[in-house]
Image 1 (cartoon, rainbow, N blue to C red):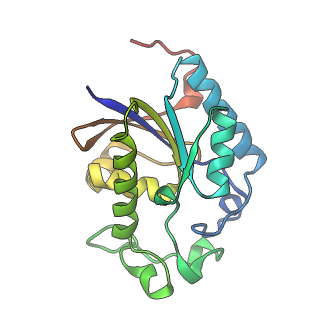
Image 2 (spheres, rainbow, N blue to C red):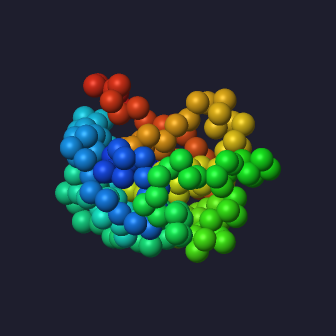
Length: 202
């Protein structure tokens, strides 16, 4: 029987608003980030979506977001933390390199500056979320992570062409729904919680 993973990006932070590179470093949620996270929680309640387990990264912006979405117990995991950008941390986003033309991401760029490569981030997030979904009694799981980490996880299951064709954008508090079965994730949808005041559950 297929299981379900709801992978959520944290709410807007001060560094998001200031357009600063935010990976291993942290900054607090803004008022908008707090309000948006609460709206996601309201959406889940209206839709009668409940979780048997909840997880977030070890970074404060993720745990703060999760606590605004649900008051249930949760576990913090390093494996779903944000991409590490080395010495670029907290610098302006204008310093980000152009995407690698082959991998269509930042590729190995940040390795030389003490950060991670795209494939390193992808491998640890895939490993961590797979281990979570393989745990007993994990049928419907919420995990709060980050933009870069969530995007590289999505890239494992969808090509860049397919992501662009579908117009998938991971805004703050975006919720990506996946089905999990036999060691594989299948992307279902990005839930537009702000546009769904009422929801019918089949």
